[in-house]
Length: 317
Image (cartoon, rainbow, N blue to C red; front, side):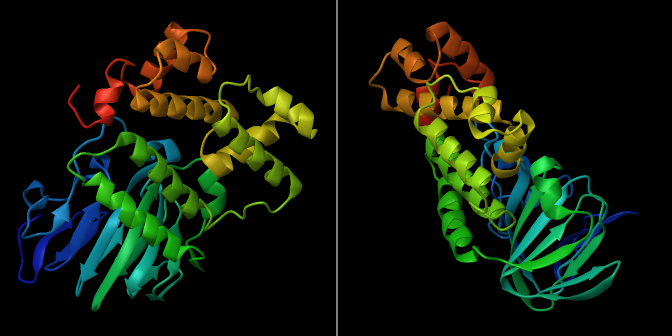
């Protein structure tokens, strides 16, 4: 049920899930896809409830980084959420206050700077005595995230909380801006995702990782080159699987898809500058001709070369 009770804006209870949303608790979603089936529609973008959901973007930018949903909740006294066995991983970063929790192995409190990793299929209860501000992410189970989450609920201290908060604030302002730049959002969301990954994966910890990250930078700088996984593997004297494994862990995509995203992002940037022909852009992004670029671009972004500059400028297609 979702009827209002004294002290609560809404609550929901069934055999698997319970949530009590206390008065004063606010929520800021980072993408339209974040909207869940339990939140009463009447409260979304209602100034009295302070639960904000942005307009839908032309494409789900967060999905490129295996982020299914994310946002910030500023929970107030008596907030309670019993999480059932969700089919995705959940990460909670405590930004302020204390989050009380209960798991199958015990209970306790998590303070500012604590990261809680909840693997898919885990039961987790959380509540707030006074107030608590939390960044939350739902992450698609995948090779890059499965290793970070393991099979048990984990607790650790953030190494990048200040950077994450700074980038998060910039990202949130752009997401809710009247005229949003898709190109800017692509870049800032990529930085946000990278900072989150750095909470779990060391960078430059060995020669192979250092070499592959250098290769990734070269791909982004020169996407027009004939990048092949087999060539990189041979040059570094490693297996092609090692190449894909690294790119999945660090960039949430295979080597081939990383090359594709680098080409598409450069194409979008050049289109936004509006100073080159599509044939010239094709050559600068590794495509034989305009037709090849057009097909790849439409498949990747869901938008044509002709209409994409208008999308970037915030105009309707």
